[in-house]
Length: 88
Image 1: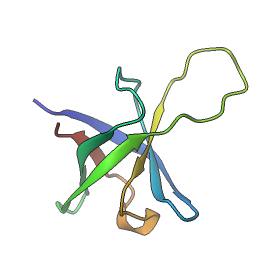
Image 2: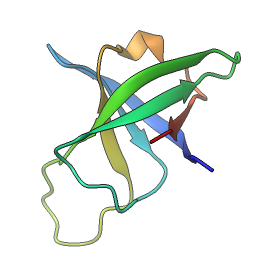
Image 3: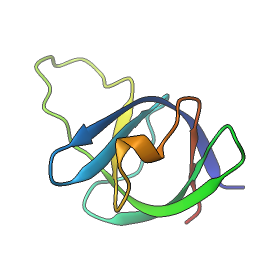
Image 4: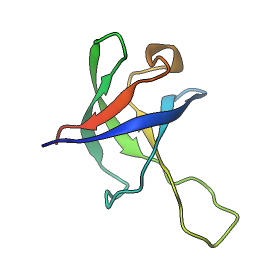
């Protein structure tokens, strides 16, 4: 079964597109594209590719959430209450 997570924050990175923060930490590594689907509350499914972001951290403690840049999508494409599903 594909892994699926709540999207807890969405923002736009100028010139790059949408970045979403999910409600978990996984063992996925950066540097590769992951096929994903954004599942909107209205039932629309949007296919895209996601790259794990490596945010700058100022503390040494554990990261509690992960962020992914979604290729070809923008913040306005991802309504509140959406979920991120990794399909590959």
